Image (cartoon, rainbow, N blue to C red; front, side, top):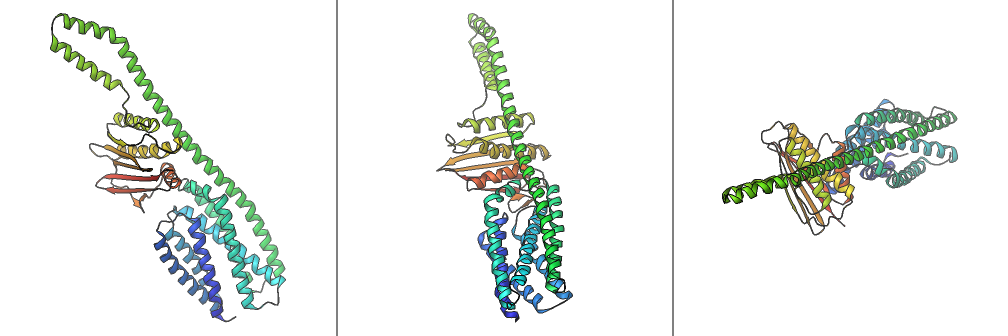
Length: 424
């Protein structure tokens, strides 16, 4: 086949890669930048693919590997996933691509042995693209939310899954090379292909079972976090109740003391004693930070934790009477935000550590800004910490659920987090 006729097929394949990657990964760039990087990738892919068709032997194999490396680099550049997760998703996708490609080529060679090279090339390109897009639709519907919810936790598990995907990809790549040389009997290739594909399906069944377990593990961690929050809140209320009980018990003694001062005509002593008593009542009372009970409870819990650690805690909260969010989402966002701020201040090693939080609800738009002292070594990438905990992953999930965003900045030993949510 003449080389120029292969360019449209290569372009269609590269475009399919771009569409799949855009919907499979958590993109770190705006649509404009993604289109720019995608254009550069498509040009590189078409040029390398054209060259691979033009040469034979070892140079063709090296160029094929170069195409795979080019796609992997594109994966890494445009995605904000952790590296181990990128490797797993890339190898899984490229392995699936190889399966479909091998299946279509072998099937067409058996069913349509008299077809021209041009017809075979375009049939494989079109059918492969249609199959991959159909699988992408199924992935978006049934698996994307599960994969995305795991975010960057358990990197060790992602590496194990990536290793499994690599083994099967190497098998499929070997089959592609054998089929391209055309010297191996087709019957043997079909048997080998079916065997490898069957084993791959079985193993991937175990893989996705493991992924589902990882998701449940992540959900269990969130449940444990909510349980800890409720336990902390209960402790705050119990302490307040105990202080109030003590004040009520001592009320008779306070009245008798005030009466003695009054009988003696010592007005200044009466006023001073009443002032001390008022201060004691204020210290015993649970401070009201917000009108919304859930928001107020979370702020009260972390105000207490901050006080125990000697961290200055200040709050500005306006317009939160009716926050149209599920309680579990409020806890996942605000609770994790303050938990990370508390740990950041505790580990900062700075004098006068502090946490400042501003919450404002206006026109169905919730803005939360939290600033706290942090260690100097805190690293960010694309507005998020390089090492993302399950707490940050939960916050990202909540922001995306409400069509919002989460952004981190670090400056002069302070970490500032801004969460914006569009409420229904």
